[in-house]
Image (cartoon, rainbow, N blue to C red; front, side):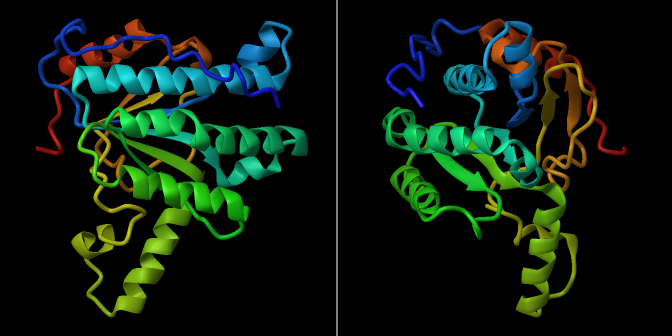
Length: 245
């Protein structure tokens, strides 16, 4: 994999130049769908779609921080994605390792807190080490928290939380259950966005998305830009959230 030009961090998103929105969501979750379709429509290799999708995620993380969003999460690799072609999976793992040594370090320097949600058993030792190092290096940061769902499944998270709660001996209550989710400090999703025109959540944040506003975007993820992010904020501001009341 060529990594010298894997990202293009050429954006200067500052709170002063960004648009102002009332009623900002605290937590936006993204199902980053359409990388492969983006590549196929351009006659490119699948790896090029994954690379551009990765670049879009980094770019939009900076937009989120400039807009004052406290938490963004992204579904970057599901437990089902291991079923994809071995060449694609290997590329994604290599891209992850490259990112942890380069762009994630820059994100940490720029104040992001980075956490990973998902099962770590079965991951390569180098990947587990990169996850742990990134979380450790960014633990004290107070900027936007970037929660990356990696080797993640919503049903798996619920099963794992239930097992930990049972082992603890505590009462089975919603409050106690939430304490055993992956990184339980991550709050509920306020706005859940899926790209590529698909209208399903595919197990993403099943517990935290219980009252999330849903937004479907026709664009494939690699085409997402700053203006699209602002459209998400504008749409959220228009929504009336009742929480059953």
